[in-house]
Amino acid sequence: MKKTVFIKNALILTASSLILRFVGIIFKVWLAALIGSEGIGLYQLVFSVYILASTFATSGICTAVTRLVAEELALGSKKGTLKILRRAVEITLIIAFVSVAIVFFGAEFIAERFLNDLRAVPALKILPLSLPFMGITSCLRGYFIARRKITPNAVSQLFEQAVRILLIVILVKKFCSKGLAYCCAAVLFGDTAAEIFSFIMLGIIWLKDSKKLKGLSGRARPPFGIVRRILHISVPITSGRYLNTALRTAENILVPKNLAKYPFSGDSALSQFGMIKGMALPILFFPSTLLNSISTLLIPEISEAEARGQHGLVRAATRNILKLTAVLSFIFGAVFFAGGREIGLLIYKSEEVGNLLRALSPIVPLMYLDSISDGILKGLDQQSFTFKTAISDSVIRIILILLILPIFGLRGFIWIMYFSNVLTCFLNVGRLLKVSKAKLYAVKEIILPTVSALCIVLLADTVLRLFGNVNNLVYIILLCVISLPVYVLLIFLFRIVKPEDIRDFLRK
Image 1 (spheres, rainbow, N blue to C red):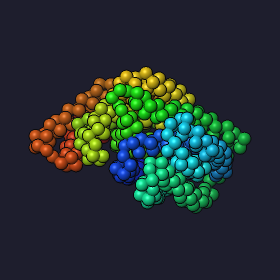
Image 2: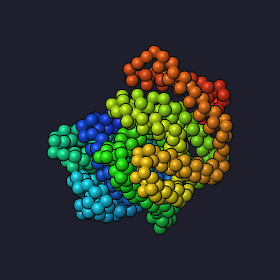
Image 3: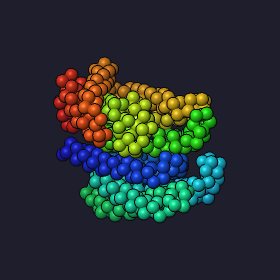
Image 4: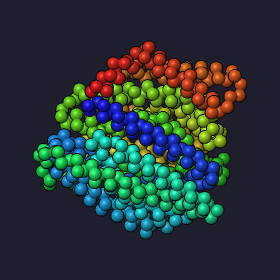
């Protein structure tokens, strides 16, 4: 029964995430065509402040609620479950309203002193209004993940995205003639309205679901420990996310500034920033949807297994998800390397974006492994380690941006991304292997899949180019249709992944 629920939830979360990411990319393409890469760059600057404020407002609360509610449900305690959720909502609302006041009344100061662009002021006035709703929604999503009910989260997020895109399309078309300031404000208004609608929908679903907890009759934990337990989990996560997001916001502000100091950047610094952060990176992360879904669902499973002392289960689950992530990420990285130019031309009609996809393709496996490891480490109560890793990485990136970008421009920023991803991936994966006592075999599970993926994709690319100028869409489809099945076949033939590995993972 539990295996069936996990598979069902994985499929629902993956499908909804794929839809959200695909629609998001299509929307970003439309927005980029309307406001240009400079407009996308300005939006990314404002959005970095939005992420900073929302990180503080949500307070790492989703992970805390997921873990603690999963533990209370294992004890069979309705009272403890609802008390945890209530305390979490109270904490996040207090912090959210503080964030609202800071951003709303400090909009001019932030735009002038930090973003160096007063066009951001209208958007900054709008964005904090969504924070209280976002905070409560985060608590409810953590609750539903712990309940192993992914459908409410998926439905609310799909609904949220639909509302967001509909409003933004209407508003941006209406205000784009008035300049980028109004365009960014329109986009943020759409984001805010979408968050409110998502909160309403998820709240209604929660009211119905909470009535089903009446069958729980187990003993609740002492009530005086709830806030302390929530803060024990959420504070390190929030501190890490907040400081990391603050540093990333500083990085996003410094990148255009220092790119502009490069003699050959000219007036294109903000456009280059928009291309790499707002256009290339979303494409590179698109295939990781399945892996992120599994990682999200594993947090309550691993937390519960760890609480029950089932260390063998934790070790097996960790090893299998890391191996799956590594094996899949190598083929995706190879596809981006061979077909990056065509993907950039097809989606954004930009050869520059295509070249960025190719340049960044080798770090795709590092990004995926780092993301998965970070999530699982939080499920193993290792949020303090991920906090230190994130802060160290951000500080180093900012120092390198100040030193390298004025000399080497965009090429220097790509070098920094390589260094950063190598550092965080090795630290997080190394820590995860140590804590879980899982193992990865370098030759069989890293080197062999990497070489296989690269050879297969480059061979497929060579064959396709023999037929002359193939349409970009046809080329990408054929490249994937040829490469992916052959790669999967080789993975099973070399027994890098065995059928029993998948059966064991699902069974456990």
